[in-house]
Image: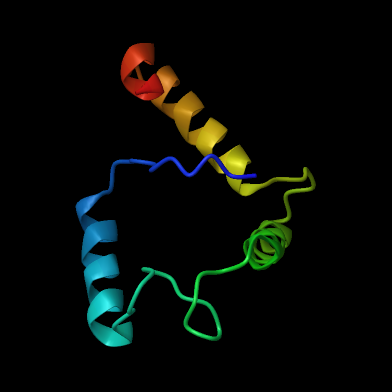
Length: 88
């Protein structure tokens, strides 16, 4: 069961601009990224999308949404960001 905690991250200016354009065009009602029937994506839908995208890259290791969190944290740590900042 998910822990229901908000997750915060950093965004590049380019990503923020792309998200703003997407928001203006798609006008999501409740969730930024809404599923086929305008609700939130199911865990299995997210898993399927990740598997499809990973397969396109040619990466043979299995991955998950949680893998992205760990990878991002690792990159921050290797870039010199203080561990306490990453943890918070």
